[in-house]
Length: 87
Image 1 (tube, rainbow, N blue to C red):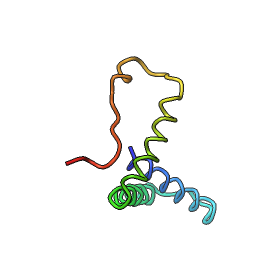
Image 2 (tube, rainbow, N blue to C red; image 1 turned 135 degrees about the vertical axis):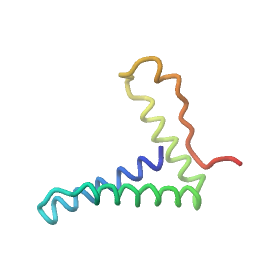
Image 3 (cartoon, helix red, strand yellow; image 1 turned 60 degrees about the vertical axis):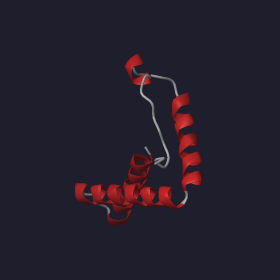
């Protein structure tokens, strides 16, 4: 979940800066590159600061879970686990 969030934030920032600075639509290749950079950055942050990032992602997941449900009951059975894997 954190990798998707970080990748989407970084790719959105890169696409918006390309659009506003160069006055052209961003290319798919640059969006995917920025997504990978954001996902790797979040993975590195999870390794360096596991407690801080875990509490931050739990806060984000609690906000998302408080939103009204639109989907069916099959999606409510899924469990989302965030944080560093416990080996």
